[in-house]
Image 1 (cartoon, rainbow over the protein chains, first blue to last red):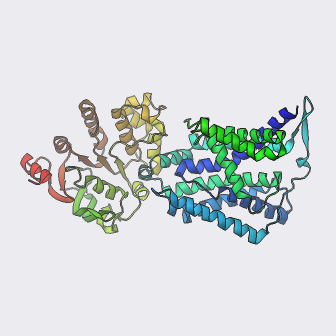
Image 2 (cartoon, rainbow over the protein chains, first blue to last red):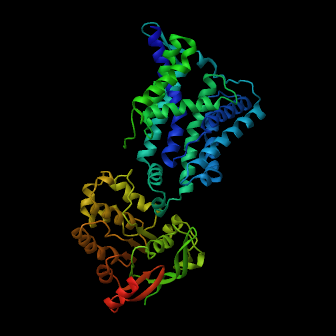
Length: 288
Length: 234
């Protein structure tokens, strides 16, 4: 039963990893930008959540209502003012600039919040659980996070394939010049994509901050999990990204079940094995 | 000549350090069809990119109606009413046939062209509306590219080498459909390598050679000899 429990907890954890990954995947899909600062933006969202939560005395999960639009605005401004200038035929400038951004965010957070680990408390809901047959217990909070992740991925999928925004994202991704001829200002379209990405990052960051402790240096680790989930699932396929997150989460929990020290190692090994066997990921891009 | 809708005035255009156009001047009247002919590398595509805003120039070098558009971005120019059927069709592969058409209407200009009007012009597209645009034949893809440009209800429509890479029978069909398209009072610039077609379809013709206008005249009045001379420079 411990094993079944490890797998179920791993699946639930995978939802969070998929949230780390979804924004990353979206940005890469629309503008071929690899955002090295993605993990640090997640941690930034967690700290913003902490500030809002302590200032207003509300539940951290509620702070999403404020943090998500703020992160969206930050994303739009960041894209229009900084990142759009780095995009071009050369893939190196955006990598370097987002790497620099990562350093700036980490040090900025360190300056403001100090290096102390922080955690947000969501109250009684954190310890609530439902019993399953066989003596298993499902935490309510991990369950909420998982369901939210599935809903967000589904919503992103809908936006991408069924809405006017998604049409603009796909057209601009296909051919920037011709998209521009259709009256789409690519600077604005990219701004919207980054805004959407950082709205997802806001949810991911706050979930992270409620689930575990975080500090200003926690970003790069989240970035790795996000990357791994995207690659396992296959680039450009959001449901694949969810599956990638789940595989990563389950692998980590199985590793931890064998030996508590093996948690991260098991996740990385699963990633490397899949990369070796299926270099394009398990579910490479499908349309519709 | 009717009222001028597009005025290109001594346009010098550059790709980086390379100058592709030298003092090109050209006018298109309201409702007029103008063809631009010239060999490979004569500057036809540069001219199209300059008019649509994919290449930016000095503001006053290109005027559209009352507006100086030489330095505007392509999306701003599209909103003013210039659309292009680009060379090689260049449909969006991630979008279905219908989505490719809908995105053409993104600029939100009112007019007669709508999904149903495009489907009436090219019925085969209605049957394939939900297919991926990449699954169509070359001729059908060209229909989508034309429909996509029409969906913005432009005042000026640019056709860039629409016969390139298509079978002769398809080219014939497409050119037979053109009068329905531009007969509605729209102005058009047709860029062609096929001189006979270009002369047939247009009111006036410009020939480019090495980035300069080497000939201009009424399509019915310019002789084949004059065109050959202007085209090849011999």
